[in-house]
Image (cartoon, rainbow, N blue to C red; front, side):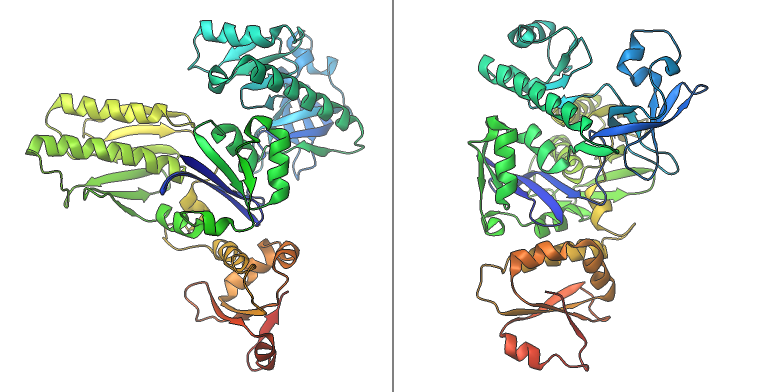
Length: 482
């Protein structure tokens, strides 16, 4: 059975979906790099532009957000200019649809949606839509379950997961989403300046909505408050959720091991097939190497078998690493067009199982498979590695040091001495929540800068506090952090 491990007690939040010892999905969420898409704000209109037929909204960020007329519910029903519907100084609830980029602020809509497991609730949209994977008959069946308790001004997008839910589950979520919206609506009235009403974070909210399915046996948190909040906000997952103060010991694969695996250039399969994954500014290339393939078939069957296996693993690596944009897969050359079509069919099958939109375009004249994948956040290598290097950033080292220190908190330790590279030292100061770490550890931690430390950091001493304090001299500049 599958288990979902969610780490929210540290600054960098992570989640691993494991099927036994097999990693199925991996997520990283950093508060300083998190997307604002999906967040709901109590905003205030600062300027209305007649020429653009748009308003600029203050949501508390550095730049004003762009709100086009078509994204205002009242304006959809009328043909007048935007000034008929909004004015400067007007308060309005808005939701981010596109992050700020370069010199432009974020893009927002007043057609707010509240996401759930089975529905995306739309308080201002009097229509019903459904996932492309749901046919019209199934859509009408689900819609009929909650339509009796809905009002003409509200609607929803029906998610694929609704097909597996019974009537009681659907009705409960519908009422819960409406109640959540009403709470946000009334909460917005109490703010005198722009403020965040709802943060739709990758971890744990989106991960729970996507993967808290019956096939997942347990959802294990390292933070008791986070576990309680999820049980309250997502009651359908309450029986699966539990908390432990020893999460790193329960995980079959550590975060450190997962990151190392997902930043390797070469991926070796048990059959001997090797995938070489190269990232550039413009695209990602995956090269299939069968030098050590152990298929044991005829030459024709070996090529097809190797390519089928490579297609499955390539799709898996694309999901795990969250690769996006243009992706090219250079399979072993196939002279038989039927074999080429079978590999293409396998890749399309794998793409359909991806929760992120992925389009397989086909083979080029050179025999290279083309596909594109929608960008949803940064890919794992870009988050933790320096550009064009397979080496961790100082920030990634700082978060890993925090995790390793936390792993000792249940042991009988009086003090820690850690040697760190100067850049990792600075990253630790600037990015790790020191107060939170102090409350969790309750143990003195000494950091010593070492410019010669090539690994980023090394925990040099764990143990007696008196010995360490005797060593605290100006000759070895050790900074006591906690």
